[in-house]
Image 1 (tube, rainbow, N blue to C red):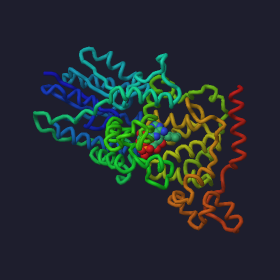
Image 2: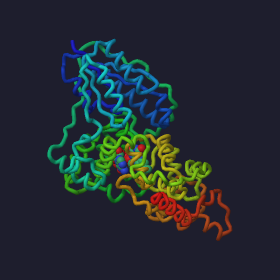
Image 3: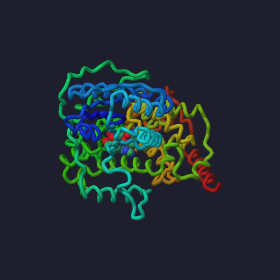
Length: 470
Ligand code: FAD
C-alpha cells in the first residue's frame, strides 16, 4: 500500500492546500502529516513570540482538523534545517513512506534543504507545489526571461498571465476511512506571547470568515481608507497569509466573488495590488537569493556609513523618539505584534533616514515583534524604505515624520490611542507637542525629539551621496 507523507511548513490549513490535496487524491493510500519545529533556528532569526503563539494555535487547529479527516499529524522538534532533512528521511524509513508532498518555500535555506532532501530520498517520490503564491516564480518574466525589477510592469504582466487562466482553489480533503485518530499533546519549546484573538483569527474557520467579511465590506472602500491608521481600513490578514492559514488564491477568488470588477481596475483592485506586491517580493527573492542574506539590492548603498547609536535605536524600539506618529506606531507594534502599513513606512524611514541607523537593525527588530513576520515582505518593505531595494523610494525622498502624521492622522486619533501622556495636548499641536508645551510653559511627560528632522535630513543626504561616490 502507498504511504503518503504531507510535510506542513508555512501552510497551516486544510482548505486549498495543494500538497495536502494531492496527497489525498489516491483514496487507497495511507496519509500521514508532519510538522517539524526548529526553535533554535527561530531564536537565531528572532521569530516574534507572538508569531510563535499564533503558529502554535494554528498548528493545534490543523492537528484537530486533520484528525477529523482521519489523518494523524506527526510532530517533531529539531535544532535546524539540516536536522529537519535528516528527520524527514528517518520518518520516511520508519513509516515506509512512498510519496512525500510539500509546498515550496522560496527562502534560500529552505530551497536548499528541499533540494538536498529530494536527492537523498532516492526511493521516495517527492512532489513540491507552488502553493503560497497565485502565480509561481518564473511564470511572470520579461521578454528576455528575466525577473522584473520594477513593480508596475511586473503587475501588468502578472495580470495578463492571470487572465490566461485563474488558478483554482483545491477543496479540503474528504474524511479517510480507517481508525479514529486522536490528537496527541503538541507544544514546542519557544517563548510564546498571547495574541489578541479579536484582531487575529485564531482558527482557519475564523480566518475564512474574516476574509469573506473584508471582501464584502472592506475591499471596495480599501483605496479610500487604507492609509489612515485610526481606521480599520485594511484586512489584517497578513498573519494568516504569512503562516499559510489562508492561501492567496482563496483571497483572490473571494475578492472576485464580492468585487467582480477587481481585475479590471474596479472596486477591490487596489487590495488586489497588495496581493501582487506580496507576489513580487516572493518572485524577487527566488531570483535574487542574496536578499535572504540581507544584502541590499543596490550594492553601493552598502557603503553608507551608518550610525551605531544604541540609545537612539532603543528610543525608536520603545516608542520614545519624541515624534508622536513614530512613537504611537512602535507602541502599536510592541503591544499587538502588528503595525499599519503606512506606519511601517514612516517608522522604517525614520530609523534609516532620520537616525541613519542600518535598515537591517530595523528589519530584525520588526521580525522580533511582528505576528505577520515574513522574510520576503519584511525585507522588501525595509529595502524600499531605505532606498536600497529594487523599485525602492529614491534615497533623496525622505519622509517628514511630522507632516506624515498631520496628513494621515490629522486629528491625532491614532496617536492618542497609544500615547496617553499627550492627552492634554490640543489636536492642532499633537504632532509637535513640545513647541506648544514650551509656549505654554507646560512640561510634558514625553521625550523631546531625539533628532532635529531638518538637520538629520541634510546629514542623511550627505551620507548617501558619499556612499554613491565611494
Ligand atoms: P492589507 O492591506 O489588507 O493587504 C492584504 C495582504 O497583502 C496583506 O495581508 C499582505 O499579505 C499583503 N501585503 C500588503 N502590503 C504588502 C506589501 N507592501 N508587501 C508585501 N505584501 C503586502 N508584510 C508582511 O506580511 N510581513 C512583514 O514582515 C512585513 N514587513 C513590512 C516591513 C515594512 C518596513 C513595510 C513597509 C511593510 C511590511 N509588510 C509586511 C507589508 C505590509 O505592511 C503588511 O503586509 C500589511 O500592513 C499587513 O496588514 P493587512 O493584512 O491589513 O494588509
